[in-house]
Length: 166
Image (cartoon, rainbow, N blue to C red; front, top):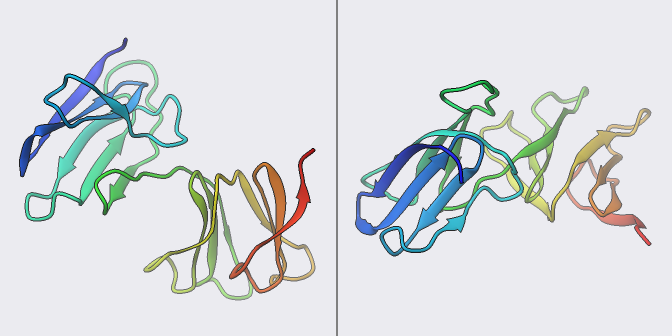
């Protein structure tokens, strides 16, 4: 139930349909709308206002977020998928004060790291992470939270479980 803000057919396959809902996220059908799968991984209540698919490579898709019409005008900006179905929510982003080209993100699908100011990102740990922080005295030591607490002692390149929930 809810308002559909947009509908987009896959330019290469009319059986595949995408819809964006005002506060229900992104949905995909591979059988002309008979069945639907929720595609907004880890992003409950995401407003989707539009979907654009690259006709030369239908795995590249852009989703603009926000309710489009209505009361809630909150937007997460434009999200891009390069595999046709994976979007992530960034819960927390930090910048290495000693090297501003290094950023680390806690996201709905893992911990991501860039060492070139965001030009390229590498997933360094899988899972759903809600927060990531540098140690107050060392930018080489980081902490991240999911269902456990993880630590990195090499500036976010590798991660080990520090505390596991009971």
